[in-house]
Length: 326
Image (cartoon, rainbow, N blue to C red; front, side, top):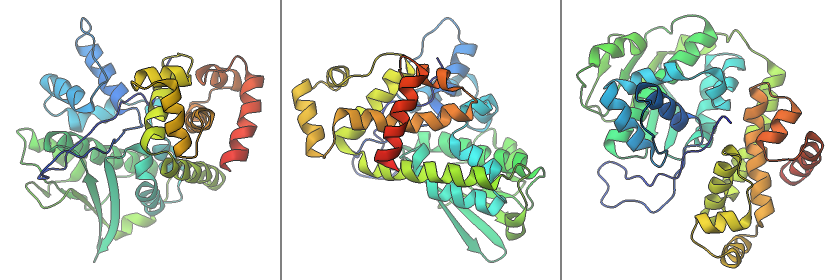
């Protein structure tokens, strides 16, 4: 079964901070799985844990020091986060960037995107809350991802592309020109991409206004749920997501065991947040459903992926999600 959101929490430290934050941050996209797949292809005799993105990046970098620039080429459309699909059907590059800025947190708790005007240029800031080495990998990956998706969607190269990066100039720095043009600066104060303002009006070739509206409605619901699922509920949601993706029946007991709590204690902790286990489970299933639909799965296939006995049970539950989250 394809794993989409199986990355465990990553407790990260912002470069220069005095102490490691206790806040759990999660990457919800396919990044960990693609790294896992890349490593498995290169080292088929070994097994790799998905415990930490940083560990996966470091292992991949042993094989390819420029893996941050190259990993997106390993992604298939089925691996794409829904945000990338939304970018493809947006009306133009400007709207795609607005969507990225608004919904970036749905892909990763470590990532913030800020789009601002600087005269004749658009500045796209990537703020990554992670240790410096992991920050470099993620910035490279997200920057290549954004450039590639916008180029593909618009059907042309983006004009006057340039970039500034916080990390030191790597040995493979000449490879940056392929994505960001010749004007790249390292040891900068921020991670920032630049575009000409004229690029904002470039139309996306697959623009579909109805699909944009549907995806935005779903993403807005996800944003509301994400703000609601914090603390213990967020940890339970992470465990439920992993169980579903590994075709294990999710349950309060299984989540409690994974989180080293008794079922009674975990139930009480969820109740303190005004939630029950079923509400968390419904929220995760509703979140995963949209990604499965974008992979053109039918109702029977989605039902199986979400842990239902048949499509009838799935469709019945779907009505409940829409009532509780709509």
